[in-house]
Image 1 (tube, helix red, strand yellow):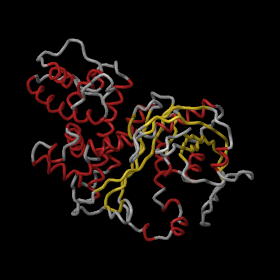
Image 2: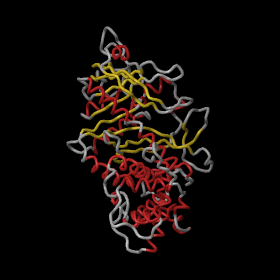
Image 3: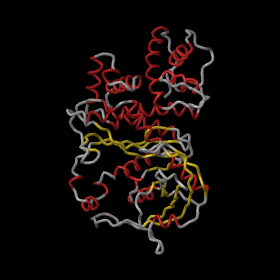
Image 4: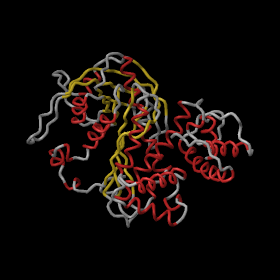
Length: 452
């Protein structure tokens, strides 16, 4: 921050919010003086989202070094502050008919191929001006990509490349909104991996078929897989059997208005992986993904791996749920949109850590619990769960500790319940912080602090 007092205050408010993630700022702070200090901090021009995120991004980069392959998942979410009628600096979200006001957040979260959330790589938060709604479709298409909201995908890709450790293969994963020709071009120039679910039936450099979907469907299936389909509106979650095809394609550049000082768009060679549900239920929407990637697909095993990469896109939706439901960021009232932005950056780090807590339990269950808890925290947790005043000599494992935390949040741990999810974990985490604070008062010799 360029100011030690501001840095201390950021750490202080982050600690308080992390201890009570579902609480408002005034509830998390100890008294009115602390609350006012937090409000002044978020109103300070020196305290920006970029400065708050910087150290966390570097820690994410360090974690990435432990993996040969990292998936950088991009996604956009909208933060609804329509009910906050006195808050200035918001912009339109949703459709014009909905008349909603809020902020746009575009984040890139790093994951291991197995789904372990490694941290934030990039994030941009802004309020829409509303000017784009006044343009015609032709005017929107004619603007340079740098003037479009969709440029967020290219900026996030550029930041991901700048933070990618040497020797680690990083592949950016995007949903259909990221089906932007310039994004494929940018990834090709940067020499970085990219996988996007296609939204447009683009023209390809093939005289016989001419269109992307026809080309992808023209090959025979090479595999059949079972895929979990999440619940949709009026459709329960289910398991689907899908076929997998793959083929090489070269995308034909789309029409763009001629612009000065801009190089023409060139054809882009990619591999296409088509996933289609076999015999879907009559009442269900058939599952179909057409994945475009610059990571070469030479074999059926390669195609299946690309499908597995795309399936790791869903966890960023869970991260957004933790941010909104766990940290309740849409309840925060700071009066101005520009004050909400650093608050949201800080809350995003907290939300990632809560989400990470559920996954480290699944990926490293036998690690010592000091990996996620300070000594006084696990001792207080053990004593509460087992109704004893004496903690054991042998430290519990991560799995034991996380299940106990979830138990504080309502997790029953019955046979068939599986491992605890984010909701019960963040509820339990809030209770644990109150319990640990009391334990520390009675046992004023804490051990080493948590390494999270």
